[in-house]
Length: 293
View 1: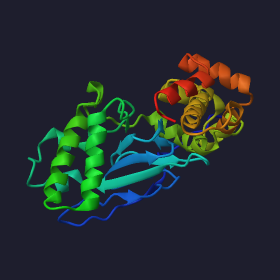
View 2: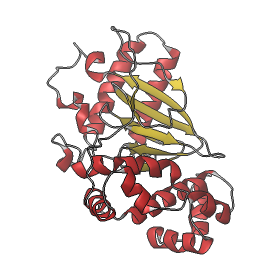
View 3: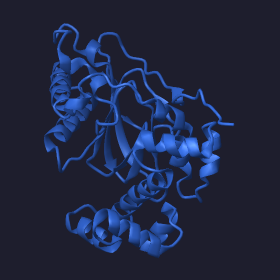
View 4: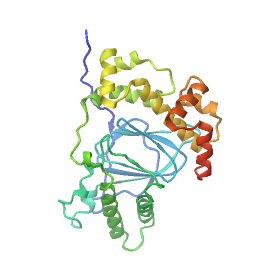
């Protein structure tokens, strides 16, 4: 008999309290909870050092120094760090509409941060690809920390500029409000589990049980929701962890393969080369030449 599920995306609500006259927080040095959570506002994070894996709903991003992440109030997210490459962040939380009230007409599309979400939106912005956006975030952090003369006016202008630039990154097919696919909701318990147990042996039957569905239904739902099978998803997750470690640590290839969850180094090398068209050793060398390490 086929099992059914009423599960929805889960996590905890982490509300942010703002001052009414200036609803934006001072940049905070912190590591967000490792459990999936969602805020009542827009969040901007600047990675200053180290490396980590950010999970936003069913999306997985590796983060390195200079990367910026943008998350609105619709998407559950969590930062996964693993010693020895824990990351150092500055986070800002804000309510853009309230912050810009009276400055910007409320009907302006750029204020609609609901567009900055969904499977087609890339939450992480790389400094190499969009230096102008990362520059604005760095300037925003600086202004909020120093609080020099007329800083509030400058902060508002920076936020407005940033929102416009982010809207330009939204794919056309994501312009209309995107509803979370039912398939993602159904397999979310498995996605949450995999985000913290990716280095362990994969038991697909256990994942199916977590989602209260049969094994065949789980595989089918996973394929429809993410366009790949569970093992492919896990291997891709592990490879992203591995690329982060290759870029941010001096651990050996074998140590990285093991910590990322691959059974053997040869299997790791094979999958890595198939995805990135180069060996892990060459990947590290190329990143080092580019000044990443």
